[in-house]
Length: 453
Image (cartoon, rainbow, N blue to C red):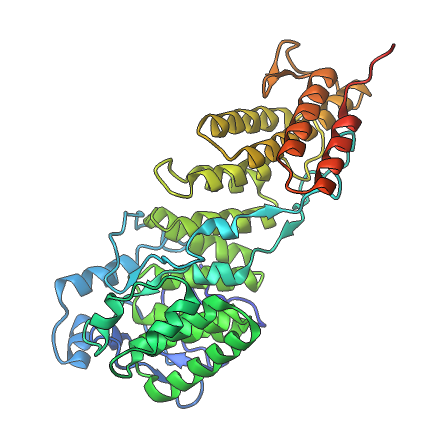
């Protein structure tokens, strides 16, 4: 597993690589992990100092002025439980919650905002037998990377900060309201500045992002020794599409805290946007298999697998989200779409049609929003109609039981067309505007079974 590196092939391994003199950016010495993160610094030559993980315990203790605690040693060991082709000995073990990061709870706090999306057809499916050929990856839609970035774990507030109590008592949730509330802080502090920076990133307009960039640069000048500042420099860079700065910043946090999953998740995002799909998949899979509370890792893993043409792997990642997760429904909806969109109507489509139909029926039974349920029904039945027409015109022999049903309709052209007509009419009744209702009724009429009078 390699680190994402901009503008050149990925280098490094799951363990700390040798010196990388071509890099320019932040450096977090390993002793920062033992001394509260107060030793973050830029390398004087703009490069990276060579380090090896895990550092010798006596060296770590000497650098920090004390021996490692049991918890710190355990955190370092967790960082080495990373599967790669050279060191496959460590099994994935469920990691407990981090004492440095917490799950995000902001407006972009759900991975559903970044669900893997296959580009939909220009017109409703049905009768159009075209699709991807075997081995060709589907055309995917890049997710909102701002939403992906803001869904990353959030550094916990330093309890020693002068405004820790003030921040804990803030009730505002909307970023604009939070910015107003932060002006009432009793004194200036790093944590207030960081919270303000994140609020500007969440607002997300051009002016706010410019303020966030300036704030990140100012914090780096004032307190470049604080690992939280390095993290938010990386987050700001990720939101503002400065991939190089983002990768270098998160790489520094990774080196400082090898037992933390948050920087690995951030590096997965960097690798994804840099097009290093294998590298991104390795990091996402590592995080997801280690701690299933990081649901965004399963969505990321599905995205990169889908972009690489691995539909089966993408669906498996999405269907591994447990039913107890708040994002279970979003994951299953994405799985239905990942199975079918841009699929050629070939014989091997049948199992996925039936699986998607069963999944949608289960989602409906669990109370899926009616508008979304009917949209998915149109997608599933549209793919089924392509498949049935392919059978009819002799593209391949019919290989289905005549009594088989899909979403309550017989799996033949008449049954599928009836199902499509009903779903489009239901959508028309739910449409918010007259023009949309007219368009959906016209679609229902197009799919109505042909009859002879």
